[in-house]
Structure formats: C-alpha cells, structure tokens
Amino acid sequence: MRLLVDVGNTQVKYVLQDVIDKSSLSDVIYLNYQDFHQQLIQGMFSQVNEVIVANVHGDELQEAIEAWAAENHIACLQVHSSAKAFGVTSSYLEPERLGVDRWLAMIGAQRLFPEQNLLIIDAGTATTVDLLSAAGQHCGGWIMPGVDVLFSSLLTRTRKIVASPKAQASMAFGADSSTCLNHGAWAMTIGAIKEAIIQANDLFVLDRVLVTGGNAQEISKLIPGVCQLETKLIFHGLSCFQAR
Image (cartoon, rainbow, N blue to C red; front, side, top):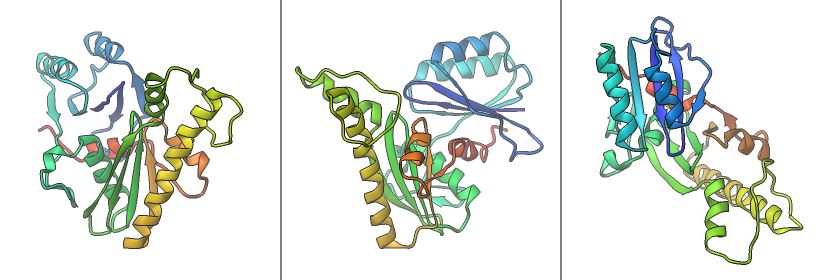
C-alpha cells in the first residue's frame, strides 16, 4: 500500500493507493497537522510500504514524516516541481518556483485526460488557475486569494464592517454586511474563473474545465455544467511518482 500525502497551507490531505491497481485511490481524508502526526506515531499506516509527499507548508511535518518512514523502513519521496515530468512542461523560467500543488494538479489532469486542452482550478486557501494544452504545455495561470482569505482580509483592513462567515456558497445580492461580504467573495472567485475561461478559449478551444480543492464542490454548483469536479487531481499527480 502507498500513502500519498498533500501537506497544504491549512491542513493535511491523504489517500491510500493500491500498489497493484495504481488507478485505485481511497477517499480523501482531511486532517489538521497534529491529528495527522498522531496517526503516524500511533501506527495507523502499518500497511504502508511507500509514501509520496507534496508539501507547501513547512519543514516540521515533513521532517516528522521522513523520520517515521526511516524508523519503519518505508521508502519516502518528497515531490518538487520541475521543468518537465510525465508529459507536462512548465511555463516557469524557474520551474522550481511553481507551487508543487499546481504542478501535481496539472500532471494529474494530464494523466486523466491526455491530449486535451484543460483549464485547471484549484480552490483552497489560494485559488489558482492553470492552462494546460493538449500537448502538455503549461500556458501560464493565476494565483488569487481563496474565498476564505478574501473574506478575512477585508475584515482585517476595515473597522466598521461586521461580518461572520456563512457556510452556504452564493452570489445573490445581500441585505446585510455578512451576506454581502460572503457572497461578494464567491462572486469575485466565480467572475475570475469565467474570465479565465474566456481568455483560455481565445488561445484554443477548451475540452474541459477541471476544479479541485476544498472549495471545488461549491464552485461547481455555482457555475453548473461548466466545471468538472475532480477532488483527487493532486493525488493522481502524486501517484505518478515512485520513492524506490
């Protein structure tokens, strides 16, 4: 069994992958850093013989994963962005500066939908947009504040807006500050995605718009029939790598 780990900006996500049927991925598990670390040291992954990690957070948890792997004689690999991998070519002049989560999402997209023009939306702490041609060429993208960051950043810079987060995603006009701010953050995000689709189609005809990340389901509901939900996109990218 292989353990595929995505250490994000606010939480850890992981799946288990069968070593024989590599297309078989378990459901995604979401945990905070401390709970994931506890699972490591409590032997929750005793069946694992290989671990592949993407990390955009910090060194502390990465070091804990590597120490656990070494102690249990488990092969471990931390994936980094590169100029080219698995048929995907980076657009960055310094490829290592491209976020590894974006890189893996493109590799996963290429694996699932080869020879297609793809727009990839990863909606989490940040909302990122990346355009991938049918030839596997990354054609650039955007990095924007995620919905929650848009909401909280305005509150920290204003004194007279009083608002609290709302669970339901909507773009309807609001009649109070909480609703206006919450729905405005979603409207900005959806508006940016629609503009990205327009710009992408000016370059070539898109085959699919893929959306992944913590806010992916809400985005797919706000623009129905436009975005294809792919919750395991990064893990399909991670699954291409081997630690041994």
